[in-house]
Length: 446
Ligand code: SAJ
Image (tube, rainbow, N blue to C red; front, side, top):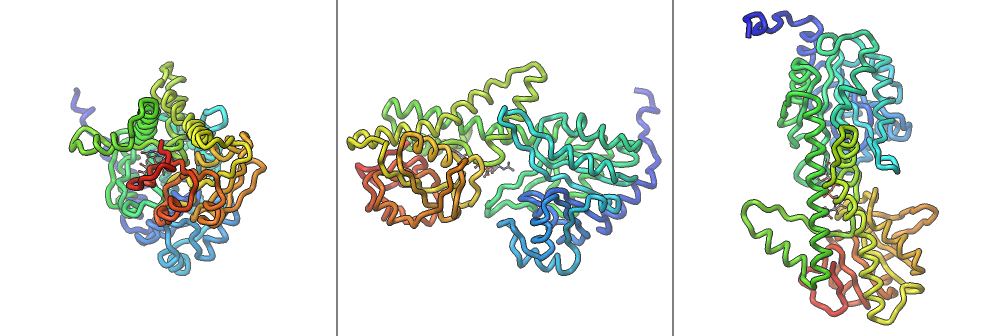
């Protein structure tokens, strides 16, 4: 390799110098587009680190609550949030033109799947277009929304370069996957290691410098595609292993083996094994969604991501499997599903949270309704649910258990009086092993 290629460009442009100085002095004006469960905590972390932070969202209701100093995200308590707003460190707006005054902007908007299981990039596109309209020299842009490898390079970068500004010189562009785990008591935005990869080495360096001001651990990687793939690997790993646990449950059911005992015993292996558990299906806004960003992109690359599709099929079948267990349990008591009173315990997609997005409880309720059952539900975190035109309110638990022909535990919230549920129910289908340790003829487990 000739000597000149070893010489990195000595000059640090004034632009990147000024940005670096502002980041280090924490006088950089920080923007966050999308004030949801990712954006709001991120905005708080940077405000707490001393930056002036401006949140940008299209929903006036969010912006109004935000500016009133009220955190609508459970993981961010008002006693931390309100003083930041009152001090002026933190404010929100619906006006994207503020980007012209910012030094950095993080895009934290949703990346859902369409019904056809292909990516809906509309939120990323509109956020990027808004940034492109107000981009200026010295701006650091970071995409955090989970997406397929290549999004930052192929979709975001070209839009930003329509300005004529050059990436890595005039502005800087990185991808940094969000890893927020709502309700996690141990890991929150500040102490979850932050992966960041830029379009150029200088982008990566300035992006890592930025995150280092507010977050405990930053993990620079060599490109945006690596950073995009990291997040998809993390969540695809989870989805496939949950699918394996569900397939093992189906096998054990057929072979009359207690799958929960099998997994607990396997989990005693001190290396080379990581327990995942069967359940009623896969809920949430990450695990059932993210892997399909990867399988969609892999098809475009001409490779079938068969693991993902198969795991998706198995996980997607679990609500029907639960309904079959209910049907068989009622049948054993000479009761048809039609006309039976079935009480669903738990609507949230996982324990101790209030989120019902993609929750399997909703599928199970609809399947049982279609079979003619009359359904009630209780969930201490979820006051009401709407499934298509069906509106339901959470019922008081024990009276509903008394009235039910069958109780189905779909979410294993802690703090539920399971002992009374066992004592007072006629029949229970437990899809979460919430009744581990209880022995009773009336308990049917996955
Ligand atoms: N589930 C099972 N069996 C398991 C684990 C989960 O059926 O062994 C079900 C859950 O009940 C839920 C769904 O899968 O319906 C997803 O559960 P999750 O524990 O993965 O929770 P999420 O969806 O909140 O995933 C988030 C993810 N965080 C991010 O994407 C940043 C995931 O990467 C985290 O690992 C996960 O939280 C976590 O560990 O809690």
